[in-house]
Image 1 (cartoon, rainbow, N blue to C red):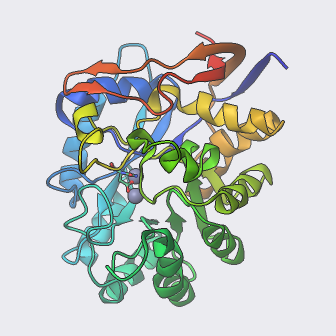
Image 2 (cartoon, helix red, strand yellow):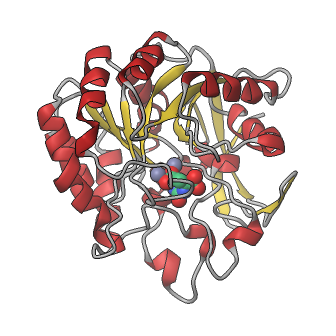
Length: 344
Ligand SMILES: NC(=O)N[C@@H](CC(=O)O)C(=O)O
Ligand SMILES: [Zn+2]
Ligand SMILES: [Zn+2]
């Protein structure tokens, strides 16, 4: 196969950041994706509908001429989130759901939740109003090893939440373990998961062997190969509960290549091509369209996009760095070759 035409995809987990960087990040995603779930971990976090609508306007203003792009705003769930805010979110077509960050789990999560149990009234309201809960699924206890944090979060919090609120729509974001695959498959159809390019293409050897690779550092951290293979099998199986969410999360080069580097891979400049690389490596390019363009929309109750995109088999190399208003950013897979590119 030399060419593949598919329904225009959507990105169900994306960090666009804010300010002058939006010009870069919005252009990169709008080039390919029609819709994107925009994560709220700004400083300060996007906790209210009105904040999300103002942020949405800044994103819309950054869309390049001639491109269409629909940001679907996620609100940041905190201990202060009220049932009234859940209702306001439910009524607003631009708000897609609430994002649960355990406090301290990842970039800009200081405002996150310290007690998941205390959220019960809010989760009850979300279930009732049919507002999805998007989850960064890691515990942050110092006594839990970083490689076990996803599994412990599932056992401690997600199993109880999905048992108590079976009608709550829940997306376990950027899954990294076989435990997450098992949890999602065993749960009912209200539970789904997003998968990033880096967790499908890489394992922790790609982070740590032969020198530390800060540009492959993201959270949840890359796991051992056996977990990567469980993720790969889930994506390749064609199970509709597993779909595309890049978790593209830019940090400037200076904040990645430093003594205490930030977590996040900026995959947006080659997002669809990276997933194509994964499916192509497994002789399964026929599975790309459902994963990228069909399953996520169906889970969230959206129509499938009308437009198409075409990938052509034509090797190209990612640049080493990208110039942005905030400074140089090293894209995920910088300097590496990809076999597929988008037909202009
Ligand atoms: N994935 C990451 O490593 N980083 C994300 C936050 C997140 O999604 O956890 C970021 O905003 O930088
Ligand atoms: Zn996260
Ligand atoms: Zn993220």
